[in-house]
Image 1 (cartoon, rainbow, N blue to C red):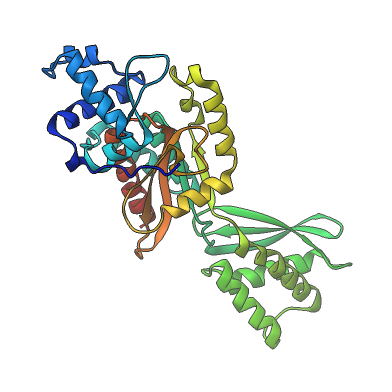
Image 2 (image 1 turned 30 degrees about the vertical axis):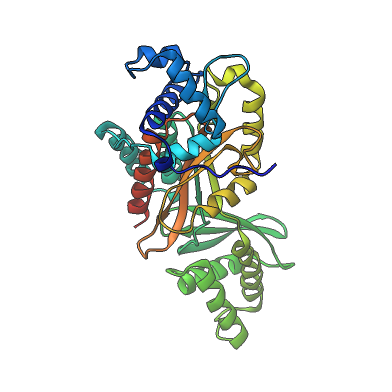
Length: 351
């Protein structure tokens, strides 16, 4: 069966647009089907019979559906797409909402950037009543200090301290008979040589100095530096960091009646690499992307929507994507600008 194209808003009559908007607004607010009697009582100025007639026309266009358990109508995913693309009137986040997002971003400054991003995403999750998503590439560390700490015979811990205060550890294998003085010598050499460089830059400089014989090290320390270089080179293949916050908010009163859908959604979120691919598809350009239900294979079963927007660093390049995931009936007019503001806040944080 070939899917019908969604008609543009301009092809709907004024009466059809009014009733369609009222059904969508009512559904997004309550999560329940909207009936003709409810609309007639809301002040539309038409009889229930006239409203039912227009609803039937909208259903024939594929914009509304009629659940078998109710005489009311709900917007289809095609109808929601028409609404968000052509009829939605966005609501600017309130001063209180903006302050909460900015406060969480500022509170995380001074530590690893992932912590600040996670805190900001948690604030977005709480305000939107959705699960918050953010994807950022694993940033290359700018090194400040390197040290080696003996663990056991034949093993040591390479400790890397970055300019942002974060610390990363790696276990390295020691050459047989290597003493504690060689650990100190190798650490001192590395700190003097690579401080202020990224891991990639440090690898290139160390490889060149070792190859040219310019490293002022004895044989044992030279071997240790070479082995440490091999361990650090694994960082180049790291996958992007995906942070998910607020999964519990996906289980609301309406979702409790459809636990199978919620279970599907939570299972989808466990497949983080697939979610990362979806967010990566939103990284092109500057606009906010809205994925509704079956528009993505990932969330087709759970009937969920994703709102995502890329954010850029000081050099203008995209450094991540932030967004939310929730039921298709989420409040798009409120949540879309909230995601936009969060993306702008993260851009300032990383600028």
